[in-house]
Image (cartoon, rainbow, N blue to C red; front, top):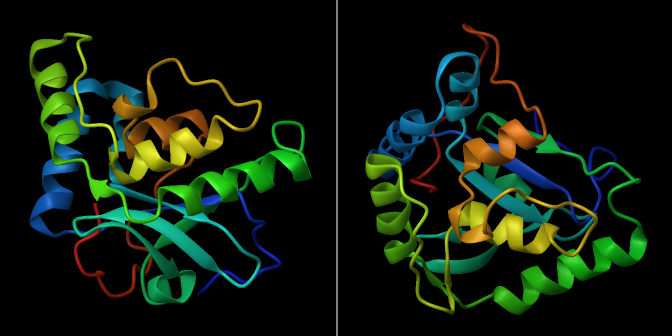
Length: 186
């Protein structure tokens, strides 16, 4: 079932799941940090920012930060994450959308993925990336910094599982319909 403009506001975001190679690697890497009860959050491997009531999205994919539509996920399992009004007023949401639009055209942050992977493997906190490049969850986290939301790490180190945990987004019940797997989003 596809969400409609009644289900979200600009400044909210979606979390989704796919099974392509890159998505599996993202979930595997997230499992290095998320143990026990927290492991459920590793289900999610992609995030996209909602920027209009019409369902316009901005997301970071392998080809860079691009516009999309929520309808592209119509046959795919995803969850709309609503930002509570106490965390984001109308002005804050406008700033979230403005940041997303500003980021359009940035390249995908492959070096950021390598940095996160090294941190997960060795447990360090050293981060490296190239300015002007981003990953999906980093894009969403940087946009949400325009609200009252404060993350416990740099947005360049935020993974989809971090967003799921922060907003307490549960994975679907086992056996629930999941729709068609989308082209690789990660």
